[in-house]
Amino acid sequence: MSENWRRAGWAGAAIGVIAAGAAAGVAVERITVGRGMRRKARLALDAAGDYGSLRGTEGTCRAEDATELHYEVDELVEDGKRRRLRRKPEPRATVVFCHGYCLSQDSWHFQRAALRGVVRAVYWDQRSHGRSARGLAQADGEPLTIEQLGRDLKAVVDATAPEGPLILVGHSMGGMTIMGFAEQYPDLVRDRVVGVALVGTSGGRLDEVTYGLPAVGMGAVRRILPGVLKALGSQVELVEKGRRATADLFAGMIKMYSFGSRDVDPGVARFAERLIEATPIDVVAEFYPAFQTHDKSAALQQFAGIPVTVVAGDKDMITPPGHSEAIKDLLPAAELVVLESTGHLMMLERPETVTRLLTELLARTGAVAVPVATNVGVHGRSTAGSTAQPGTGS
Image (cartoon, rainbow, N blue to C red; front, side):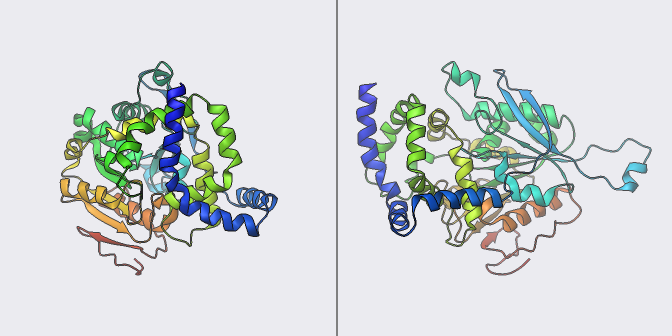
């Protein structure tokens, strides 16, 4: 343990550069705004915004290791004509939303609000996140893998949509979960998946990401970071107390790595902060190593021949746009949209644009008759069929 803590000290010095930009802003804020006022502002933002408040029909299912996974279903609102039909209708398409690392199903708040009643949708919390239980396999010392997350998705699909077409939507880790699912269940993908949206995600080579830091020294940081996280994860209470004590700096870092523009609604920024800070440090430690070895490029071929939308943020330092471009190279028929002045949490930073792209995908799959109206100003450039141009409405 002493060796891990010694490494933690070195790593802290090495990766402390990450916080430099955030710390500068926090320093100015500390001079001009008192701690009590900052705390009151956070509480006011929490009370004023209803972000994350949408709920559906709740349920749970069991993963292969008996971990309890929490899901919610928003049902399609049927029209009267369909209800009067005497013959048994064909199963409706189901859209399954998979959230990212250190988030929860609530990260899809804006898309959920727009799609309620328009399409049947399933939102679920990945193991050890949100309302799902802590991973039992991880409690027994088994490393977390992307393959396991793919099997978790299969359990959710079996419980919530055992028949009918599927549209899979994944952000960051959620997109990787979909790739793990496709790799292990190619027959199911071929028979039932009619559309896929991959938002701010990667098919592999995440071990090359520098997180906006100089490449020099990142190799050493990567080698010791898993041990550092493990050491921190063994002292959860101490670390969480430290996170609370440095809430201002933590919030600044979240904003820097989540968003690419300066005009983010403070309520949305605070919502992102709450989502991320709700993830315990030991969960952060459990999941991190899986991303460094993640490689599901071959699995992406399972989506050839169906509509695929790939969305990236040009300021994303977690899964840089080059990773989305690599997915496009593997799936030439996919639509790639790169959102300008946008970071990693693009479904929160550019909610109307992301929602429009998703509803256009749903229209192409036949899940909805026409795209949902969203009053969107498009902040992006696209390829493979999209006519959107930066700064135009569509």
